[in-house]
Amino acid sequence: MGDIRETVRKASIFKNLEDEEISEVLNIMTEKEFHKRDLIMQEGNEGSTMYMLLEGESGGLQSPHHEIRRRRHTKSRKGLVHG
Image 1 (cartoon, helix red, strand yellow):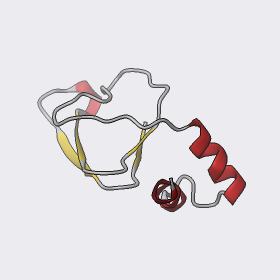
Image 2 (cartoon, rainbow, N blue to C red; image 1 turned 90 degrees about the vertical axis):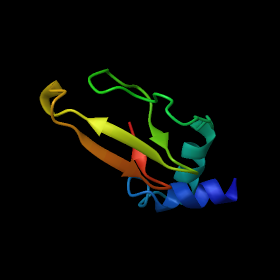
Image 3 (cartoon, rainbow, N blue to C red; image 1 turned 120 degrees about the horizontal axis):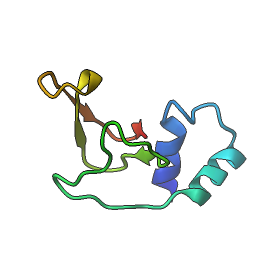
């Protein structure tokens, strides 16, 4: 879990946490694997989960004001937090 600890520590949302606090975050984390084209979250839905990319890449489409005509594509890198 050392590599995951460093990834969490480097994430901007967690960067000011002490070692004990990082351990608490790690204790409530669960690892989940997704495959290409899996839907992880959907715009407009209320969420209660935070995701941190540990390996690979993710992408997303955002529709401003839920207008399907205009979309912005984004890509994520390791350690980026979504949710």
